[in-house]
Length: 125
Image (tube, rainbow, N blue to C red; front, side, top):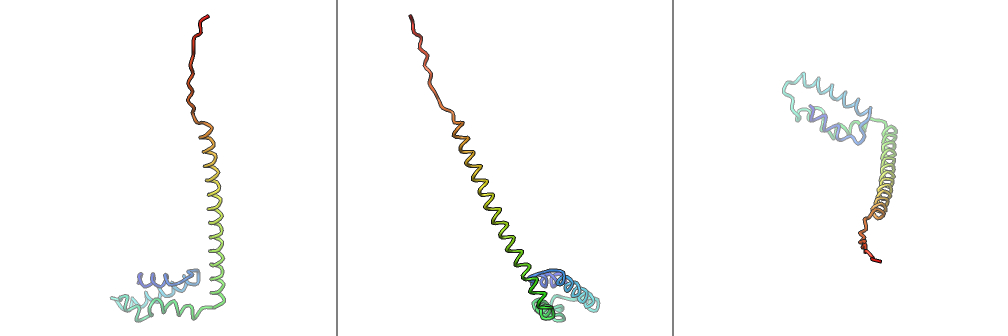
């Protein structure tokens, strides 16, 4: 049963509240089916309820298309926002790294030790 439900969950492109409730109802139906049949296998579940692909397909056939479109658009907006935020963070961190590296190079150049040879001559009068 766990493998069957896991395969069903994987096939949902968006797994929100409605999909979670659908899976919970499916799980309760599977549990009822398993109480009737003791040695229930994965193939028995596929025969009784359909393949995971068919289960997800039937969910989307019975669901409201407008609600699904809203979810898809929301997820798309979230993805675009995340890509934008991550891109800005990468640029900002790159600039900070470059600036720190330039400061480091300047400090290294300023603190370079120079070797001087000092000759002290004693001059007699």
